[in-house]
Image (cartoon, rainbow, N blue to C red; front, side):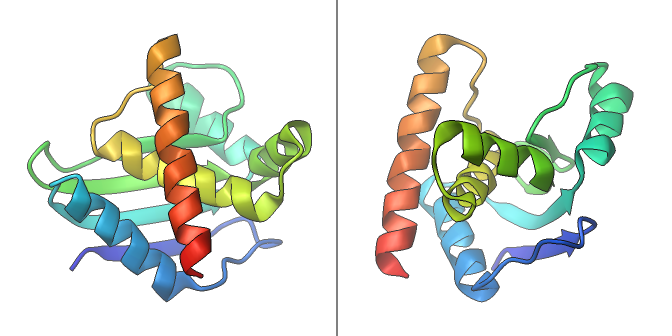
Length: 142
C-alpha cells in the first residue's frame, strides 16, 4: 500500500477524512497501473511555493501546485507542494468551494505523477476532465 503523508506548513488549514482520501489516492495509482511507493503532500503558503518555483524550476510566478517525482517512472516517490493561499484564491475566482478546489489540486498532482501533462490546450482539457471525474467519484462516495 502506498504511504501517503500530509504536512501542514500553512497552519490555518487542515484536511478532513485523510484516511479515506489516502485510500482514494492509492486507488488512482492502481487504476492507472502505476506503482507508487510514497507520497508527501506539503500544504504551504504562496511565498514558500514561490521560493520552490524559483529555486528548482527557475519560474518567477505564483502557482497552486508543484509536483516532483523523486523516484522513477516504475516506482513513484512523489512530493506535491500545494499553496493553500493560491487554492483559496482560485476557488474564489472560479466560483467553487475551497473543499472542491483543494481536492482538485490534490488529484491534479497524482495525475501528473501518473504521467499526464497540462502544457498544451488539449492536455489541459484532458486533465480537467480527469479531475472532474475523480471529484465526482470522490464526493459521491463520501
